[in-house]
Length: 51
Image (cartoon, rainbow, N blue to C red; front, side, top):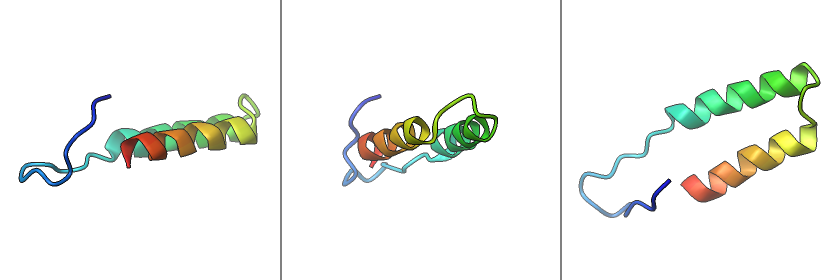
């Protein structure tokens, strides 16, 4: 992952990978393959890094 300059004229955020990952994490939590706290930490960390 690289840091993008959000003030650049061609910058457009791309949220599809995040949305897909969020669906997968929620499915793992539902199937009890991943703990709730761990899933939330994964999602929160990605939101922090991606902005």
